[in-house]
Image 1 (cartoon, rainbow over the protein chains, first blue to last red):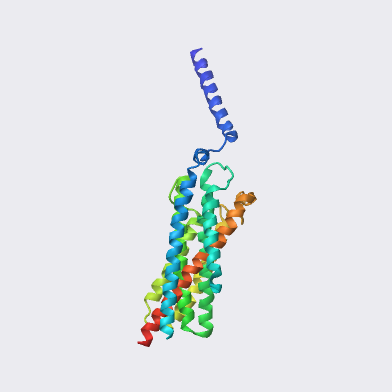
Image 2: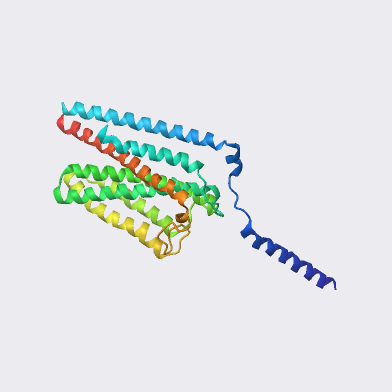
Length: 75
Length: 221
């Protein structure tokens, strides 16, 4: 008797467990909605943009330096 | 300035990619979550690498037909720049893999193919470094470079399609499949590819110009 109760509870436990496994398909995928709602993502975008603009300025300066060198060699 | 319009395009495209890439809506995919945004940064690295290495191949072939040392300079500097973006692609891919597949490296056809491609190109520089005579070095390196690009096509484009792979766009599937359907992502992805390729070309032209200046100084003095 006790054994069959044990089996029954185990079976229900497995069933519940597997039910939640199936339910996972319908659950929403976790995204960074909080970060987007608070608007702090703009801080990240600003920081990365500034870094990129910095690299761009560096490239432009290098470009000009090399142009100068090329002109001097031509003389 | 007229000659430099494409550098402006590069700057605008990449800046747009950074802003739109972080702010525009992306589809909610299981496992990927927000990391799907890496598509705008990791994938263009490989597109840039394949473009710039094709430039390298082109100039190697040109060297073999005309024997102008200038073509050799261009080919080697292009390969150099290709290694830069390829390395960035490898590192960013590894980080992305850690947080989606759960490991820094997976013995996957695409990943190992990318690593082997990098090694093949590193051997190109070892080969160059081991030959002192200029014409000989240029000729042997050019021949090797053709072999290297063929291997790149095999390891990056053919073998991953013939085997199962975790990496998207493989296992018989040539496109980006599920991402490809999303039109907002396309609006960012295409400019991203153009921008990063042009930026890579810019860095490459700087390298070439500097190397030519160096060569002139060495031979005129």
